[in-house]
Length: 570
Image (cartoon, rainbow, N blue to C red; front, side, top):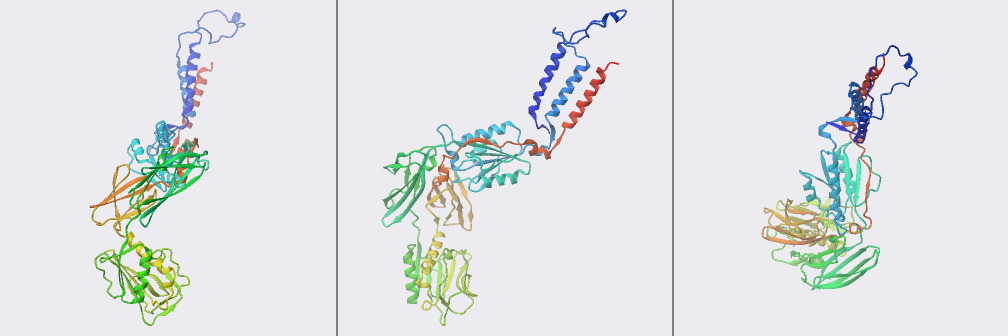
């Protein structure tokens, strides 16, 4: 495929018109027969040009001169033969952060970016064209069959944009000589190289929005903490709408405001908050559901009075459990570790005779859920010398396991702990209630339903279905639906679009809220417009082409030599 690296050199074709004018103004010659030139030699030499316009004459010299001009102009345009499968490859990096949805009242930054991208795509024949979304993690878009599809997949809901990581991904997939286009609402930190063209389509705008929101239960009331921020250079006075109530709100320039509310339990389920919409609508809305009411059903079936009291105090202090005849967790000191039903986890507390107290060394599996935040420094743990205990060791003293976890194929866990409470200091340290809290929280995370009821945009959460044989379907705030695959019996999600989600599995339906808490994206004062970098087409494609300018120059020199021969008088 033939391409011109310097198409602007084609302006040299205007010389063809100049050549035509010269030939139009040539004087026509008349032939006179004379006996001698002696009387004519003192006259001025004959010229072939003049002011009188004559009918153009087109001898062979005219076409030769025309050909020479065409050859020189073509050589100046640097023609080259390009490989058809690598003709102007382009990778487009799109800022997928939510600030791209900001609007100046006419159109959003995202809409400006789409127009800019279309303009560049229409300026040249790019092939292939690849797309990389720059969100919290780079994402390569696949299956783009038309330009209209990119507008559907480029939604701009990410709470941040890692443009540096997206650029590295673009460089990897575009090869050494591919071109890269960046569309963002911010300029680059460094000057881009010859392969990168950076277009910023943003604009500094004042904005105010929510940057934090928490709802917790406190007895018969729920407590709500809100934090708003004013990203402008002027004080603003506005109204905050909470359900049907309206509160006046004053925020200093570049300042933040914290507010606390108490609402009766289950009032406003969910409870919505609204600020007047401004440049960015996504941070002007906030929805908070009550905290999850999930608690673990616990039965304590321990004969030893000391162990029974120890387990009972820690379970009650956690606030994560309730008594149940069909428990989720069974505490026992019996050798029988099977629960009342097929989903009951068991915790077997073993009190050994002839126990010996140890100060360590402790070997712990810090990645295990039971060990979250646990430190065993200074603990005295008394146990027997038996080195065998069913399950994988979670805590060991040297080669002696004292806490193990055995996972059955059904997903049920059997936890065994060996300890003499009379010689151990563990029961009187904060480590013991922390250990029980970790156990209950871990079990609750495996119960059916969503992990959380209020989620920060871009964070991960999972949903546990009651029946893993049925599909899990997620309905987004914009009413679109998608199936969520199960991994190890859980549906993992990372929602970004703010609003209320509905997740359904079988006959069970749950809802949760996603809110945008990203001060970096809400602050639009640093947004800008401009262009940085310039594609060096020769550098980007020089190795994938065969230059032909030398051939056209040789042909032009041959034409000039021929012209000289034809015009030399003999």
